[in-house]
Picture (cartoon, rainbow, N blue to C red):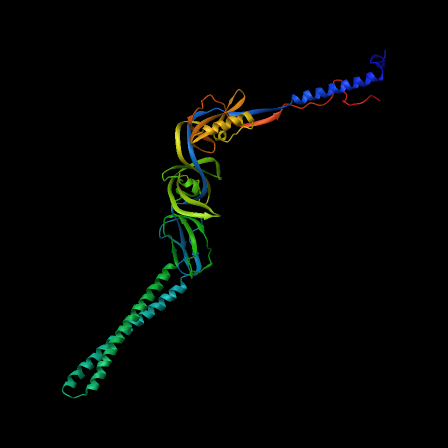
Length: 411
């Protein structure tokens, strides 16, 4: 018996095809329906332990005392007695500017000074002679031997000699000052270290000319003690109120990425710096550098500890940022939000496979974890940190006979 006879001719075959197409479409719909999205949640449990509230910043490491050694006079560098990393003592000669021009000035000034002293002596002799002549004519004018006008001439001569002496004495003072200045300039040609320390910078070479006409040129930078360093960290105005002198600080440097160093806040400066409308303040962190691992100029990534608790209930900070997309959870979220009091936050715990909002009071915290100071959170709660959605799978639209479903009679 053929198929055509079994199903009652051509009309029966058409009905059979329609039935098979309907069956294939229903199977595909069922398979697609079984692949609806499934949501999974990443959770964490509250724990007890130490928690710190922190402020992060960055800054440069420098010596506590760093002295710039300059040249007070102009000239050519004749000798250099120290180099980078040289240990120096206070008053040690570290460089020499060619002293020849200044020695010549000293000799010239000395000659001017001696000449001025001689002029004073000469003026004194002139004054003494004029005074004697005036006194002699004073006795003669009384008996009429000389006229009053002649006497007045000698009085004037005596007064002029006294004024000349005063001028000569002024010239001596001026010449003495020039002589002292010339000797000082000669001394300045010898550059000495003002402190005990180590040379961390040298800006000149032998034969180089330095000019001190308008400002003192820097020849060396000497760090007084590299075992005591400091960090000048910049802190944003929104965080500066949380930092106190004497507080703890930790930092890292790129030179030792695995090492962590500690320091103490020694100063919170009041002077503000504004760059692109951002206001920052400088915080000074004192650092012990007994092993000399830290070097001036290194960049430090600083973390300031503003508060610390030893036995706090804490949760990941990411839990405070999670918000569900499920409509039922969103309604619950809105109800909890309406009941939230000042200082309370919402976190979500996983109950029966769904996130449920819980109100908590938060305390101190940082970027990684936050203290739970109060609320309904239990130690056994599974706190939701994030959600991810994925399809279970997708099915094709093939019929049970393995042929693509289509409408119409067979050809």
